[in-house]
Image 1 (cartoon, rainbow, N blue to C red):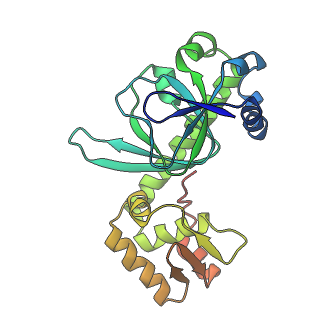
Image 2: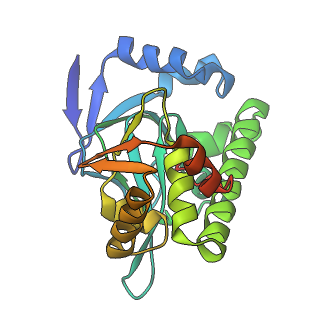
Length: 238
């Protein structure tokens, strides 16, 4: 495997086996015809590096195939709002590609991340009438719209204890604990609250013997009560 650094710190990974691994793993052939695979690159971003900057042009249409990224909306006054975390598999640039708009949000790598990159100009010329790709865009945009509407509505209507319980339920595994791979500040932003309020609510759940926090681990002591508090809100990061 070799890598080429292109501008900033992004690395183009010259490893056809790894690229093919991700193509097969995520069934990319259901989105693009085989003739486009020759135009795909594999890009790598280290944790903390920016992937896209708001108000710049979309050079590549990205598909996140490994890792985790965050999406942040930047307001005109300089303030920001964390919109979403994405894990593999998710596409980046749907709206900008279709409408030929500048990038609307900052995209940063929360973990080391691999993304399949395809020239946006190439896709606009050859693929905006391709049935498979259009179905993918419809599915991707509808999923993101639903998640955004759901999360925003919940942040306005439900108390933090319900939103936090839902967030924890959505991250449950077969183990008796959850490992938080986002910082508490990021989780607070996602849930529409402050770090201090989040900390108080975690302690409230601990006081009710529903969870026990140990650094980045949250042990689930009473899953039934946690699910009852979650109200089926589906506060997840896709």
